[in-house]
Length: 283
Image 1 (tube, rainbow, N blue to C red):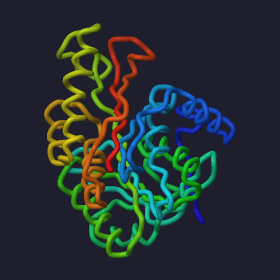
Image 2 (cartoon, rainbow, N blue to C red):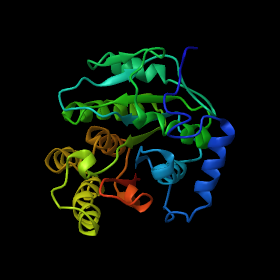
Image 3 (cartoon, one colour):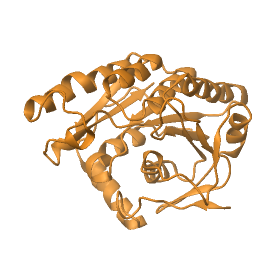
Image 4 (cartoon, rainbow, N blue to C red):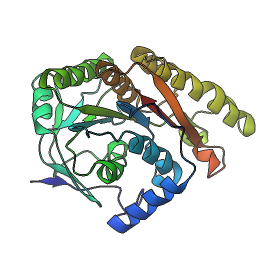
């Protein structure tokens, strides 16, 4: 089986099994998130380096464990403009320091027959952090579960793909869970976004207003609004992935969204440029 090699191991997260386990154990020793009534069907996670947002992503993905376990985990991600073609892997596996994760080839081919995807070969992929940084967490909590990484643009195409995932799950009686990978507002001179000045007032505005608007769209289970928010207010970098996660989760039976945690890079590295992160679950 041809395996896609990681591009960010050793820089954005550890490149050894021992290092990944050490970080995951450290994350899990931190204050736990609020208890949930049942295991979520979907979750929104950030994709900065593990130092900044790994703990939040780890807790959200860990909360999705269930008995029986899922048959497939679909991960929506990638930084894309609205006119971009969606991206998919249809064969092979993705290597992580904790072991390989095989591609869910049946679902991949089912979707590739319906949509005009750019198909990634395991040996010649796009360089993408949004999906890769979640994979060691998935391997840790779910073992060698089949995965399907999909890059989706912030458009109605993302919602159609998400609907097709949910329809497949129902028709084939497969237990599928979905993850949407996105960071929130990228604020400050590094991102050419300084509308609210600098300092504490800017951090407060991002946290309490700009990021909050995007989070509220997620909690309202309103995927179209999720995309619109990001396009209007620059409060998410992968709105297509987040919207697809919401749409698919609803198709799989989710009726409620819950914010489990919020943070931003300013918490660990104060400065004029910073990024917001949210952990949201759907059940």
